[in-house]
Amino acid sequence: MANLKEIKLQISSVKGTQKTTRAMKLVSQAKLKRAEELAKRSRVYAQKLDELVSEIAYEINANKVGGSESRFVQVDLPVTTVDIICVTADKGLCGGFNVTTLKKTLSMIREYKEKKIAVRLRVVGRKAIDFLKYNGVDMKDEVIGLSASPDYKKAADFIDESMNDFAEGKTDRVVLIYNGFKNMLTQEQRVLQLLPVDISTVEPRELKSSIEYEPEGHEELLNTLLRKYVQYSMYYGLLDSLAAEHSARMQAMDNATKNASERVNELTVQYNKARQESITTELIEIISGMEALK
Image 1 (cartoon, helix red, strand yellow):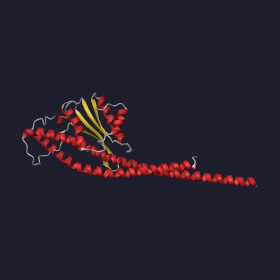
Image 2 (cartoon, one colour; image 1 turned 60 degrees about the vertical axis):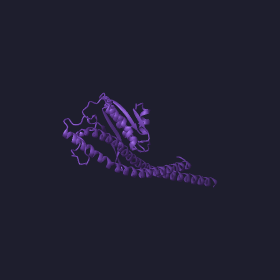
Image 3 (cartoon, one colour; image 1 turned 90 degrees about the vertical axis):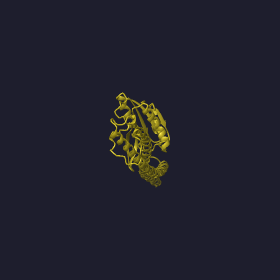
Image 4 (tube, one colour; image 1 turned 30 degrees about the horizontal axis):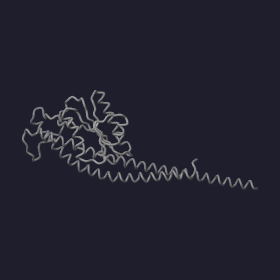
């Protein structure tokens, strides 16, 4: 059995870890509230943008035979090359948050390759970048810092490269993979097809806005709106992922704090047993010595 000094050092070490995990939980809890609020405000803009896209799509589908000619909405084109955008955190200590996204990404890469479809991987987040580099997986693009501090302009610049390649026919599909925020206790794996946008499935919505434009301006307006739509989908995905990250880290630190508490209790019992054993041994030695003197 370990001596009393070693057990006391272990108890002190675990208590120190417990303080750290408790503090990290509180920090993540505060950051989660801010991320939730930002995502909530951003959702309003996303909904309005979606309404505009739906209105223009409805107008085109209603008045033009064959619908839009924009490549951004041509969902029936053959797929030979796919851009996969993988979003993870820059930091760890958040349970399986990063692992689930990486597993899904690698699974999709295998599925596409089995279908003889080329895959280009664009990665956001240090954890995914480090993992993929270690395993020798090629990346078309990589960025650190964007998932920890989402910025609309940087997100737009990042996704613009994929959009431009798609518009030029270099790729045929753009897919976004990340862990999204569902509630305080749950994160949800999300796989979103950013391009092409399937406007045939949009809810029919007649024009309600006061904007007036020439009939031939529908296509140009739709392309502009779709670019904004994809850019904002990327930005909102980063916000959603950040909220989920803080939620996952808060849970992980809460579990770590509870485990540390249980470990302290176990070590305390072990310490008390060792101390009692030491006292008993000393008493036996004293009694034995007294008996020897008789």
